[in-house]
Image (cartoon, rainbow, N blue to C red; front, side, top):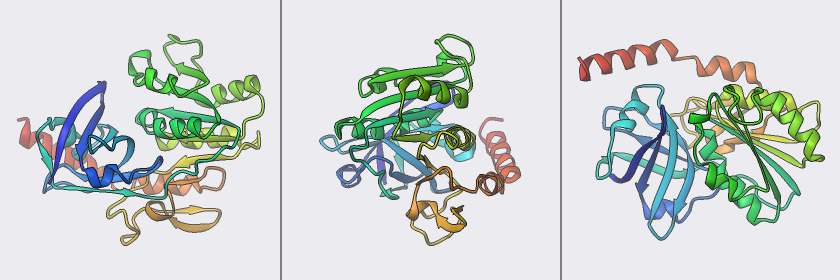
Length: 277
């Protein structure tokens, strides 16, 4: 059992959870993830590592509440325990001095992009951060990301910030303004990563995405997280989660992510009816 040190709602529908595990904390690297179970009757779900504290012995993730398991996680409090907490899993992001890095994040990816942006800055890169939110009140961790960014942009649909375009247009305008970009790293929902990849393809900028297909064991044994990259089958849990966004078969990934859509709705309705009659 792993003890929860903190659980808080950052913005509507997005929560932070900090879990105590010194062994995992001292091995974490940017881009990796953990597998968590909310209770003994739940499913194993992957959460990208958003931060860690080796002295405190804790690992932090930020997640979006969408189904039964994430609803359960959002109701836990400090002092509660989770039966499964495994990691760090996946290949770490490639961190070195590339030059000028553009980090694009949205939703839960705002937190997930932070350790990568921080590591890239520490490696001597110029870091440009572009965040996409539907409204200004959905932005979080602004101070943390500004602290590791040379340039910082936010695009929100409500027009609160300078830009209200969707992220493809925002990326295009930022690239034109900032000049040559050596690498783009995008983390967020599948659609955001897809649109980022489509926007950068004609610009010829290498773009890495952190794929989030359905996952069970996280060690390559079940095969549930398979994706097609450059015409070859890959497992996101052991070959990724970072892949070249220009080589991903996005159509297949969108279809696979919908495999249990109706079952997930049925599960959530049953659980809510049982617990909140």
